[in-house]
Structures are given as structure tokens and as C-alpha cells.
Length: 199
Image 1 (cartoon, one colour):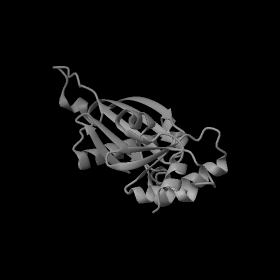
Image 2 (cartoon, rainbow, N blue to C red):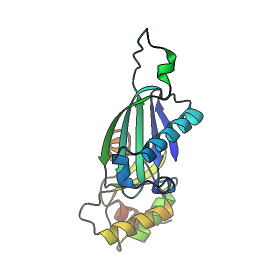
Image 3 (spheres, rainbow, N blue to C red):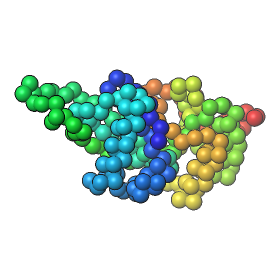
């Protein structure tokens, strides 16, 4: 479980499928009101407080983005707490007012610390699995984005296996890349990298 602070009132938590499996939670369970999910959320909020100093008291908006290949991204935004002057502090104990939004993304997004790693992945993929993809530059890292629409299941999993060998899954969404990243190779990134660069 990795987490990062996005702003004073917003954090992003990246859960791998291993994180969920260790706690006996299936991906589909994140959509359900069950004790295991509440326990996971409490654990995430404790860790957020310990690591980031993020105080999760009061109303919270929780967005869960499920990415089949990478795991889940949970974005927690703290709302303003309107305190009743007559309420006692005892009423505030361990209360999360949750507003949960769930979205699912099929996109495959991997980041690479070094351009050489991205080139290595491209050379492995080129001519075998795909020649497609878009490359972005985001926060000093190279990011490859693939839209798996129309991709067969076997090819989908093989693509992920190769990308995981050279890079790591990222919790960045395609919308964030479009807005804040810089497009380096607009289309056929695998082909362009494989044919034009040697690693």
C-alpha cells in the first residue's frame, strides 16, 4: 500500500491486488458495505495519519478507481467539518462520513524511471504483442499508456507481464496524464521507440 499527499485535504492511496488478497478482499468487495472493507479503510486512514499527518475526521469523499492490471487507486478528500456548538467531542470519535464514488478503468499505464527501460520494453513488445501506445513525460518519469479496447485477453496479460518486467504500474489516471503530462510520442509509441532508439 503506497500513499501520497496531493494537497492539504487530499491524498491518493495505491492498493495492489496483493494488498487486497492479504486481507481476504476481492476486487468486487470494494463496491460492497462489508466489515473487511471498513477495516481496510480504517487501516488506510491510520497509515495516512502516521505517514502523512492526514487527519481523516469529518466528512470524506472517497473515489475508488479500479484498474484491472494494476490494482486500485483510492483518492480521499477531506471536507469541511461543520461543528455544532452544542456537540461534545465524544461524538466525534472514529466517525467517517463517506461519500464513495467508484470508477473502473481498463487502461494499462506503466511508468519507467529511465528511458532505457521503456526502450527495452518496446523492443520486447514490437512485432509480437503491440506496436501501439502513447508515451508521456510526467513528474520526471516516462509513462506508457495503452488502451486495451479490442485486445484479446491473452495479449492483454502478456503486455502487462512485459511492462511489469521493465517498469511499474502507476496510479496515475489517463485524465491526469492528458492534463498535466507532456505527450512525447502521440501514437505507435512502441514502434517509434523500438525502431529509433537503441538501448
